[in-house]
Amino acid sequence: MTFTTVTDQPAAEYMNVENSVGHLLIVRPQRYQDSGFKTEFQPDGTDVVFCDVADLDVLDDATKQAGKMYRGNSFLQGYLKGTFKRYIGHTLIGMIYHGPRERGRKPPYMWQDLSSNQDIVARGSAWMQAHPQFLVEITSATPEVAPAAYQYREPVAPAAGPYAAGDPHATQPPVYTPPAQPLTTLQQLRAANVNHQGGAQSEQPPF
Image 1 (cartoon, rainbow, N blue to C red):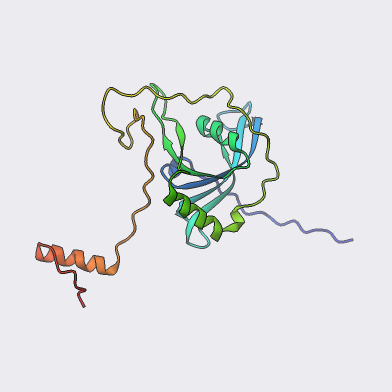
Image 2 (image 1 turned 90 degrees about the horizontal axis):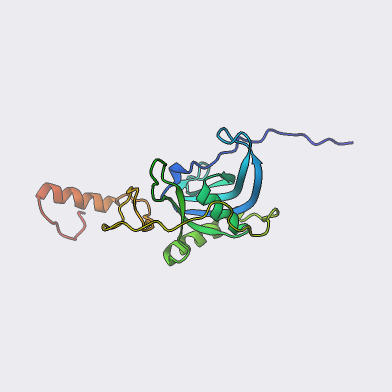
């Protein structure tokens, strides 16, 4: 008889929601558990939704390319949990942002759907085609569950003033801004020449 050797699994890494605010995310809700998930702040257990997540604005540790994957990431935040559990078996693209702050409470984490933005959809589709291992079969999908106690309500619009990043009273959803790209060598040389001469320079290459 041959016995199977059991090897240690690498430590699982989970996404830090706060650090991922404003990042472009692909989320695949896998399973919803309605009770019994114990945490430091919920010792009697609570409900939870498990998702596979790809953060397209973070470099993968192994490949050093954009798109870090998190398997079976648990979401306990009210609005995120209420949103993701309704889309078990679907693939979502969007970003997490801070919602309006209620007096005496921290601003909630909310989900901004970006599936209507064709440029973002094209970027997400290209990443998934290059990383087919992310699209593992979902075998534990459960029927769509209607929202329970937590219901999202549209905040009351302020008297005046546009949306501003970080404004706890903001009512308009934020706009995803991709990370800034470093200047090319030619752009750096042109910028240095402008600073040196105190004015605009010729478009001709400096060589």
